[in-house]
Length: 144
Image (tube, rainbow, N blue to C red; front, side, top):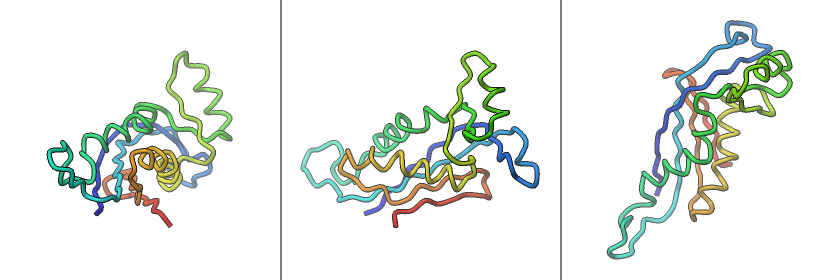
């Protein structure tokens, strides 16, 4: 059985080598869909009876492991030295340094890698992370 939970957060980024507008500092209202698989709980009287996992628990894991870290942060590529230098000059700025440019594709992969272990600890299998950069553009990281 597959279930999906959607969460939203705001972050800034830039794609340093982009040929168009995305090379400038800007932000997005991202949406993250987390799809997990597992067996339906059949334990009589259990709070999550009839569920793979309570949706509030799916959300709590995604928030604590990823969304709370990325929300209202600037997601910056570690080789984007000018922006890193600028962000370090702002005391207490919330910055997340990534190993690859913060494209939707790379963010979806990073989210999948981060969340995979967290859901595995709960006995479930992460199947897909869909990251919407805009309502019309998204990237899917799926289990191979």
